[in-house]
Length: 209
Ligand SMILES: C[S@@+](CC[C@H](N)C(=O)[O-])C[C@H]1O[C@@H](n2cnc3c(N)ncnc32)[C@H](O)[C@@H]1O
Image 1 (cartoon, protein in one colour):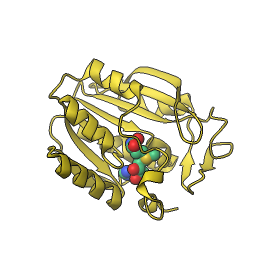
Image 2: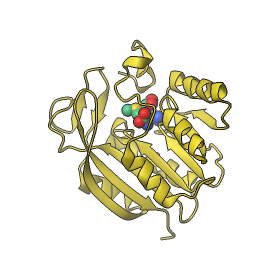
Image 3: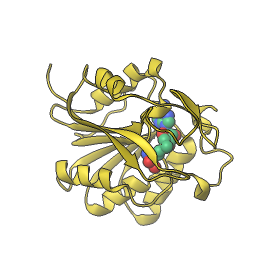
């Protein structure tokens, strides 16, 4: 399936990752590191619910997603609640020149597994460009240790037809440590539909090398 089609042919209320409130691990990490009113960047923001949650808490949020449907939904959600936020439709596997405000923390929640290894350098270079020195970057993506979801091995196909790449901690460390100082990396379990997911949590900071 083409990544741009991920929201096509599936009613929005049937999307397995759709939830109004972010997972505790995301909320806790953001609240620990980013003071209220600072600017967050939601990479692969999906339908915009997490961005809306953080705006309601007192943050500023920008979002990027490859999907036209997702970006439209995010914009409409913000308009309907009278929230400020800017959303960009963009494929983060391509060189990106979107100008961002000063971002305190960028997060991607269940996104990097959509980016296959050959595109990951480009993806991370984009993230690096969006951030300033000392900004934080949190990546949470599926782990190859997952035994419940989409079959077995590194490349898997999910029940809704998306093709994903499941990483190891070592791969994430090798990729990210070229651009960021890794503050914490660990395997975690995430609540998921229809089954829980084994995922890799990697918290980083942009530093001068
Ligand atoms: C599993 S969903 C997670 C959405 C959201 N982060 C959440 O947790 O609700 C993955 C999201 O990544 C987006 N995505 C996948 N590949 C992308 C790419 N190359 N560039 C930008 N966004 C991408 C998809 O459109 C989708 O919205």
